[in-house]
Length: 94
Image (cartoon, rainbow, N blue to C red; front, top):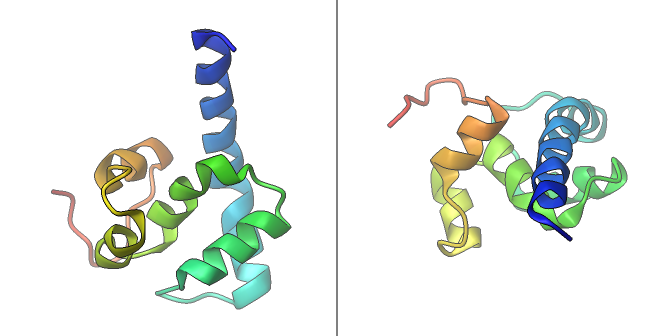
């Protein structure tokens, strides 16, 4: 797979996570301020989103502390949040 293929795959994954995951989360778990990692993973899988980009979903719906406790420094929370355009209520950008 070439650089362009990876880039377009990531862009497609971001678009799908941003458009499909919120709807699936609402359907599966209702509207909430906080979700668990298990809820995010379950909804991402039910929406047939690529699991290699699950960190996007975690960044979208988990607090920074929860994200960092399960991600172990593999991905940057702020960078993923910026890519998805999501910002939690009462959470200021750093």
